Image 1 (cartoon, helix red, strand yellow):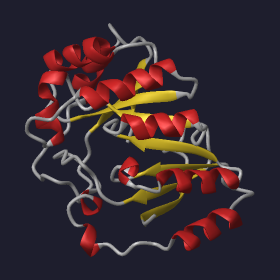
Image 2 (cartoon, one colour; image 1 turned 180 degrees about the horizontal axis):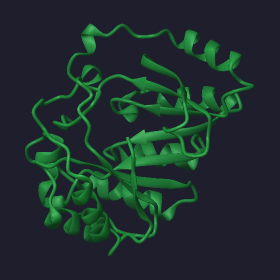
Image 3 (tube, rainbow, N blue to C red; image 1 turned 60 degrees about the horizontal axis):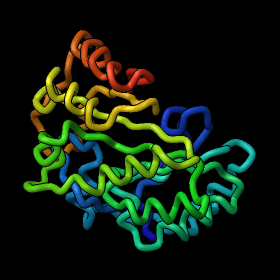
Image 4 (cartoon, rainbow, N blue to C red; image 1 turned 90 degrees about the vertical axis):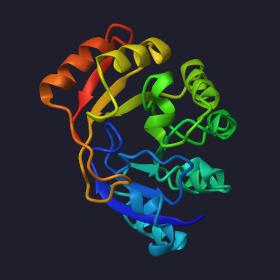
Length: 230
């Protein structure tokens, strides 16, 4: 397991927890708005952090940290992701997993073995607009639907989240997305921000008025939806 980034303290990444965030490298998608482009398209230029160093830090902060978020990139690309989650759980930490939902079999293994306490799954857009939004022509949405259903049927708390970009989302796409994936799970809309390290520069953020309107549309099929500040 290679870790390419460590945020040593966050109050935002894991709801209700004082946490650290680990960033794995590599992703099977090329979302143009991705704010961790270095971990997607420029991985050879980023030096990994030894896992032993990461685990040592987490052990030393055991009296302060009560959670850890495993993000990316896409963590489920890693062949030894389960081993990493086991190590984190053995430290007494509550584990949150971020995923794009494209590896349902691996997600099912993690859920069935109790290797995480919370999952945040990205829902990128309406089905008809998914390929454009993830930057993969002909993208097969079947695994994403399977992952969503796994989470809805399982006992592990989870949320959906959607990063909204002016060039990729509209009233119509939000309505179709809500119809395809709606339910009573928490679902957070977060406004795109340009981190300076995105896959495709030149994108723009919706206005607050737009975000409020999108939220009202989403709530028609996902009543527990909310806005999240980034």
